[in-house]
Image 1: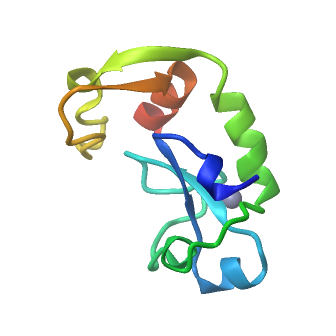
Image 2 (image 1 turned 30 degrees about the vertical axis):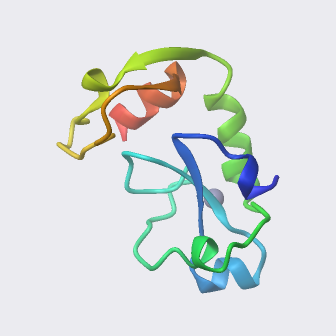
Length: 107
Ligand SMILES: [Zn+2]
């Protein structure tokens, strides 16, 4: 899928190797790994180089599982996850998949 089609809280991530092999991943704000559990340790070259294609099949499958139950979540409810990582710093509301929220809290 095209990276530009990803909506909050999802974004694409990839180190140089992932970009070169056209297997960049999908990540979600508030978590420290990609949807396929690849650690995000390096610079996000997929974003810097504006790589348009999201190619990791495991991430694409996971995204389909997470989407589908779109609910409106108050930012205060998702400000910090279980590991005290800020989920969102902005005030206001975002549209968030319930499954995506549950995933963020669990991970
Ligand atoms: Zn992936």
